[in-house]
Image 1 (cartoon, rainbow, N blue to C red):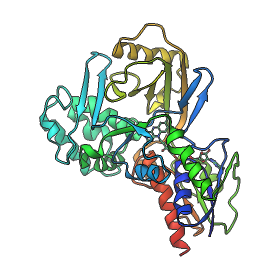
Image 2 (image 1 turned 180 degrees about the vertical axis):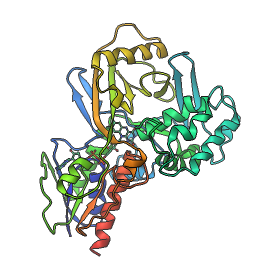
Image 3 (image 1 turned 135 degrees about the horizontal axis):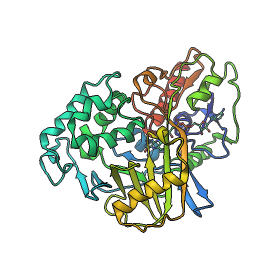
Image 4 (image 1 turned 135 degrees about the vertical axis):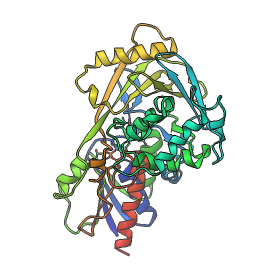
Length: 395
Ligand SMILES: Cc1cc2nc3c(=O)[nH]c(=O)nc-3n(C[C@H](O)[C@H](O)[C@H](O)COP(=O)(O)OP(=O)(O)OC[C@H]3O[C@@H](n4cnc5c(N)ncnc54)[C@H](O)[C@@H]3O)c2cc1C
């Protein structure tokens, strides 16, 4: 059997690997000169170093991610603390604290004031039970904002990071799926992970090497403009390209931006290597060697703000949080305007499944109906599912 995979983001790469592993001949087309899509690294001449298009945070419970990395020989390419610990800093009060889960399923950490969010009581965490019953039309903020300090200092930044959508319009259903697979399974499934070197070094380069070593044909700079009728195809492109190639397809059409600001600044990475920023413009900051890299999610509201103003605002937060110099160091602002689809109830209802009306064509991508938000975990699962559906169809 021969399959054309269109799009070499993580979804297309996962699909290609699953097919190649089962002896299928694969031709993988990628429109850009480099693979990786929204998950890639590149050399930035202004900063004179390699950067990622954006910080990507994973959790040890992302089993499809871990399986993919093991398969392509990059299982040891992630870094992060050895325990389920998350560092936070409030940019208004300059207070630093750590959320320290315990490894097992039973969350006894909520009974320890030293391990839980400051200013919260153990009973506040019962708010998380509300998530279990959340349907697609339940919105995050109305459901969880009653949790007060717990919401402001943990649930809100968690929701924004996971959903990349303002919590007052974001559906709680995909957040429920994330929490069920990580926090609810205990600390062992909630250890933060991120690439040791870069996204491409973990996810993309090893996958391309694995595929080509097994005879797959990878065509970079190859933009596909039509699907060949009757050709077995996995469409692993963004939704706005998928509708062009497959007219009539219904897809999510609203998106949210993510901004990343990379500052040339070295700070001690501490125990975790990253911090949640509370009360500021950005949500997360990663200490990556000579670069301090900041993520602003659900960022459509900053579309009109110029880079200099944005950098000044974010730097002011970093100065307050870490006591840094007043002068802004060299920096780069990366705007991913359509970073993910907006996880609103209306958009979630537009996510198509893997199969299409044409039995030869399967869909993959973080925007397909994985039940998860638009994440690497969802993208990899969608790619695996598309490959298996095509194999089943042709068994
Ligand atoms: C800044 C940022 C931060 C993020 N943070 C996180 C995070 O912390 N954790 C997390 O899990 N996820 C995060 N994500 C989401 C994650 O990056 C995506 O879910 C994932 O990369 C999507 O992969 P994909 O393969 O579905 O799509 P894409 O990466 O969009 O891949 C689609 C590919 O198709 C190619 N293509 C398009 N048209 C054609 C054509 N006509 N012919 C051939 N090829 C074509 C594109 O060039 C692209 O390479 C983040 C995303 C961004 C942008």
